[in-house]
Length: 375
Image 1 (spheres, rainbow, N blue to C red):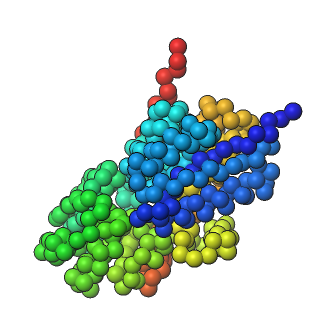
Image 2: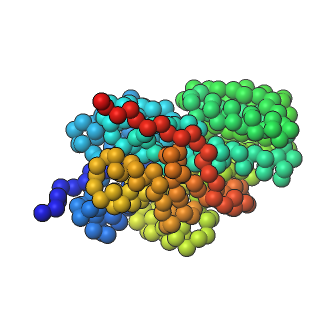
Image 3: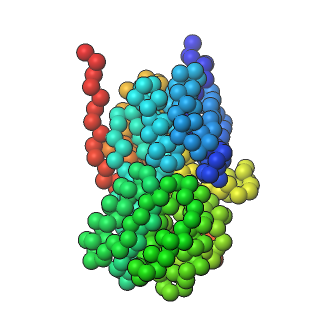
């Protein structure tokens, strides 16, 4: 007699607070994929149950919800987190204390390395490394200004940007960090203007994002030929700002809605039919990474033939899926990060148009050490 108890999947999403426009979309993706898995017969002949928690764009709340998922709900795997600080908040209760598998779906600064953590969004080798040389070549931009939120992701990403800009004959003419809730950027924009920077590489995040872009637009930065770059910007962010404020903005992600392969188109049509409205299926908002993560985990459980953690982790280490938003995705063995198709896109009249299909790019992350075995 097989086990008929449900398999529990914990998902933490920022369904309220400044990142709710992302979190609500992530919650939709989780519901859609879990429903699909159950329609396909579940996993290992068992139903899959989604345990969805709201982290409220607050790291303390995320940590508490993570502890609940592992302790009370006893989920088999945890997904979620957007900010890197939220990933770290989830990691404590889930991985360090809970010894539970954790899959992080957002594009981020890289360098997360743990036997029980897998990352399903792009990292600097897939975003900064191809985008910056391309931008400098195509637009002639040489000098960059880096207005930034003050947490781990912008600091690490900016170090990579600085290296790549220098390697391509350019320079950084300003680098500033602000609290996540900072919203007055008049002085920053005045300094950007005074610097004469060719390009602004932005890592300011909501809620400061909208006022910053408005201030920069009003300063005439883009009208003067300045280049605006934001690697996380996607269609959900386009909904937050007037199209003119981000006209010409360049990004680099694993998926945009303009990606035209049949699977990506069909998935987008299905999502839009199920969840009409403003919370879109997008790349920078981790929808693509969450879809992929859930499907890769399901493939690993199926291959392992059980939920024994070491077997699922071993299968996940080489898991791949052909049908994935933006194209096929494959774990690079040992790295716990994915080889992904990457795209450079530009905002034009309130939509993203793909200007360069970069093809499949490796994450180039460090090999994950194996856990010490209990003696």
